[in-house]
Length: 269
Image (cartoon, rainbow, N blue to C red; front, top):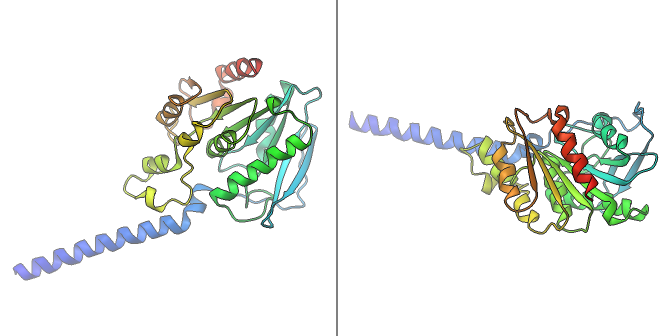
C-alpha cells in the first residue's frame, strides 16, 4: 500500500511538473501575441481623418516597411512623436492626435511591425531601432530637438523611454508607464519565471536613468492593467508623477487634470 501511495504521489508530482513546463513553453512561444496583439490594416485602406494629415512609410535596413501618420497643426509650436498602446493602430490615432493638434502641436504616430500597414517581425531590438528612424525622420524634416516631445502610452512608454535615453529632446510624456516589462509580467503571471522567459524585458527603469529631458508621468489610481506602483517606481528615478484619482487604464483622456498637467508641462518646454 505504501508503494502504491508513493507511486501515486510520484505521478501527481510529475503531472504538475509537466503541466507547469507546458505552461512555460506556451508562454515563451506565444509571448509576442500575448504582449503585442497586433491588428492589421490593409495597405490600400484610406483613412477618413478630419485633421490635415500625411501618411508616410519608412524602410528599415532589414527589409521591413514601417507606416506612420503625421497630423499637421497649422502653426505648430512643436511636434509630438507618439508610441501607442499594444491594442491600437493608426485607425484610432485621430483620437490621440486631435487634442495636441488643437494645442498647435503636430503629431506623428507610428505603427509597430506587424501592426496596421507596417510589415516585419517584432523584437525588442527592432522596436527601439524603428522608433529611432521616426525620430530621424523628424530631424531631417527640419524639427529642432528641443521642439520634439515624445509621448508614450502603455507599452509605448517603454519605446519612448529607451529612445529618450539616447537622444536630446524637448521632453517626454508617459501615459500609464511600467517599471519594466519583466516586473509587469510578474504582476500578471506571478507563477511564471518571466525573468527567464521574456524576450521583451523592456527595462524602462534602467533606461530612464539616462534621460536628460523633462518627464511628465500620468497614471490612474485604479489602473489594473499597469498598476500605479509601476509609475511610482519610475518617478523615484525621474519625472513628475500625476495620479488621476479613480482613473483606469483607458480613460485618462477624460480627466480635466490630465490635460491641465499636459498644458502646464508643454508651456514649460
